[in-house]
Structure formats: C-alpha cells, structure tokens
Length: 353
Image 1 (cartoon, rainbow, N blue to C red):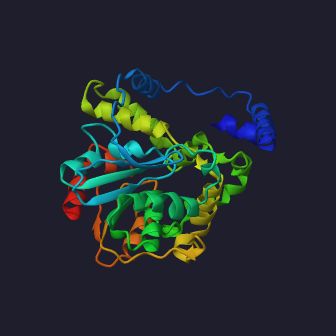
Image 2 (cartoon, rainbow, N blue to C red):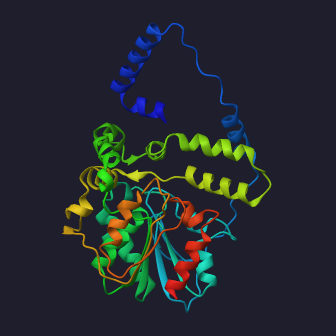
Image 3 (tube, rainbow, N blue to C red):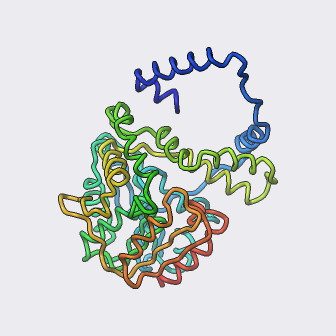
C-alpha cells in the first residue's frame, strides 16, 4: 500500500527517500527489530485455513450497471431493503449459509432485500452521492413495488436517511446500524485529520477512484495495533472450530474491498469528515439539504465501535424521537456478523415484526 502511494506521488517518494537516507546516516548502530514470531504464525495460520465462502446469491429483482437488488424472500413478508456501505462488499450481511443476518430475518418471516452496489463500472466512477442516493438507490426502492423499511449499515445508513427523507411515500420505518452522523462528536480530531488528508489523496483520485489498498490503510490507521493483535490471537486458537472459520470469513471479506468513486470520496472525506456537513446542514442530495425523517426507527450503536465512534451514531439517534436504541457489546463489524451478533439480530427481528 505504501509503495502505491509513493508511486502516485513522486514528491512524497523523494521526501521519503531523503528522510530515510538522513536517518540511516545519523543512526549507524540501528538494527531492525527481531521478527514477530506470534504475528507471523497467525498470518500463516490464516493463509493455510481451508475456509471458502460458498453461498449462492438469491435472485435479483432489479439490476443497473454493476448493482443488483437481491431478494431473500419470503414473498409475503414485510420488505426491508438493506443499504450497505459503498467501500465494502455487501455480503457481510450474508456471510455464510449458517451465519447470515439476512437469512435469519427471512426465516423469521421478514423479507430482506440487499442492495449489492457491486464494483464501480465506468459510469459509476463519475458518480456523486446524489447519483447513488437519488439515482440507483431510489430506483431500487421503486422496484420493490410497495412501502418498506429502509435499513442502512455504516455509510449506507447516511444514504438511507437521505433516501427516506426524499421518498416518504416509499419508506415506513428506518433501521440504522452503526451509522455516523456527527463526525466531530467528542472533539472530532481524527475526523478532522482525515479531512485534512484529502489534498494528499488527490493524485490517486485523479485516476477515477480511491483504491482499495488506500481505503484499507485509512481504516487501519484508526487503531494501528489492532491488526497485528488479532492475528497473534488467531494463531493461538484452535484452527478446526467455528470461531476460526468465522475469523477467516470476516478477514476474507475485509480484504475484498471496493474502490470508491473519486467524487464520492471527496464528498465523504472533505465533506462528512472534514466539514461535518450532515450536522451543519450543508450536506446536500440533488441540491437539497438532507434532513432526518421522523419515522419509527431502530438504531443499533455498538459500544466497541472504532470505525464509527458511538457518540457520532448516538447524535443521529437523538434526532429520532421514540427511536429504539440498542447498544450491543460489540465492534463495528462484530455487531452484524461476529460471534455475538445474534443478540442484535433477535432484537431487530422482534422490532420488524
């Protein structure tokens, strides 16, 4: 990842090379640290694990470009359209046949539909958030053919809020899972730093998208030591049990990212993070400020979330009087697909019924 950034920014490459040369000359006695045996063992165990995701997608009732609306049935159930993030694969909500939020809800009589954004095609590389929300998302909603609950996960929750506000004729209830709103909650220093990084990302954005490797690097900087720690722990656990299989499934999903269209990256990094535009009222879709619709709402705010600080998500819940607010003892991904995810699944199913 770092080498890709250097290649895209020659001036940064020269600065790095000069700094390394100067530091090496000033530190003649320095030797590199010994290899981290536990970390290497964990990585080796992950690479050797036999898990492969073999899950057949349900039928699509709508398609446009690289996007599809997958229908998990049953046909007579109340429809709930799930809007995932643009930067991760949608199948985190359908990770395995026996570990799937969507299949769980379907078995409970609810009709989940998943908007799989897919890989950005040539047209989508020029998309703004307006193109996604007022375009593909609204057309997918219309394809359902009846009013629905609209459910958003992470940045998909912000898009769901905007779509629900625009189309009250189509949305009866709102589900928000780990959805940020106030990006400057608790001071907002990390968000401001990310916003300030936008000029350094422009050489890559000029190519049309923010690459997957760079997105993963930005996420890893939220808690730099956590990646090594989880692999050390994985290397010490039994490799033939369901816990190890779930770890590999989630790591495979995390590695299977999606690039972000350059105009959207600018809106998100410069606007949401750098300018806190949802709170300030300056985030606009199709030229109109995004307001929070007053709908019956279920809001899940994981208490251990490091991607979306709980204070950021709770600020949105506070704008929804009467919302059911759940605080699972889980992280950002663990709440929807981790080993303890069933608690949130049960609560959501009960509310949707």
